Image: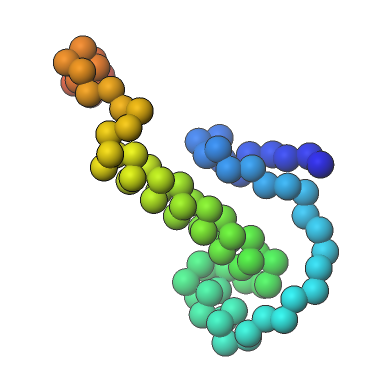
Amino acid sequence: MFVYPIEPSLDILVAMTRKTTIAVDDELLARAQAVLGTRGLKDTVDAALTEVVRAELRRQLADQLESGEGLDFSDDVARAARQWRT
């Protein structure tokens, strides 16, 4: 199986596509297309799946920020961050 990154800034990988048959609620599809700005079933499903994965990554980041686990808030790091912003 080959994988490629969706965006360089994300650690999300997408596997090669495969064909399948699913039953889709047309009203829900239309609403999802309106929200996502997509056209067609494949584009909408791909965008929805990507958004679900991104939402989970945001949730994980928020949890990490809340707990502070794995983050370095030492004075040296804070000083370097302040210098970087100026």
